[in-house]
Image 1 (cartoon, rainbow, N blue to C red):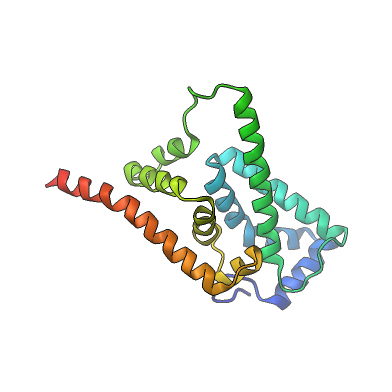
Image 2 (image 1 turned 90 degrees about the vertical axis):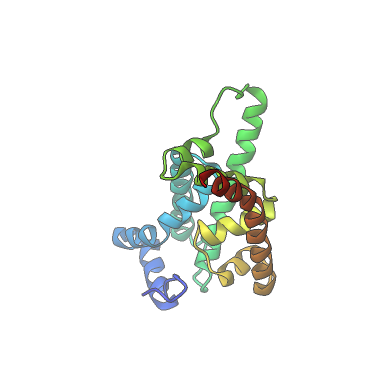
Length: 196
């Protein structure tokens, strides 16, 4: 059963995790159904490539399966922050690897995967502008926006994941949204003037 903030209630999740640790396929499907879309959305928001995001998300769930099976996690009501911490670590590893690889290869002719993805969605100008604005945020601001809006995490879960008080995260989130609004408002003003 899901609570109002999207997290599965502790007793139900504890049972599902215990069943998954014993190899119950149905329990694994439930875990992937509950968290797969959110993990993928978070990873994709950071990586910008659907195929790479799918691969990373699968590796996150493979890690979860191994750790649960081997007793590397005990259910104490913090599964979601643990899951997203693993996902963020995989993203960071992937980004570091891509930067090292980019240093060895010239990628100047390669299209930006974030822009390419935005072009294939409705209203590409707005999406491209939003994606570009998010990329221009500082790493901490971008992280909080992506955890909240792509991973769908609540502030309490983000607090557990990042080790910061909820009030601090609320303030950081508000400031990050204000920065995005400031970056996007000149664009929307130009577009509205052009349409008159």
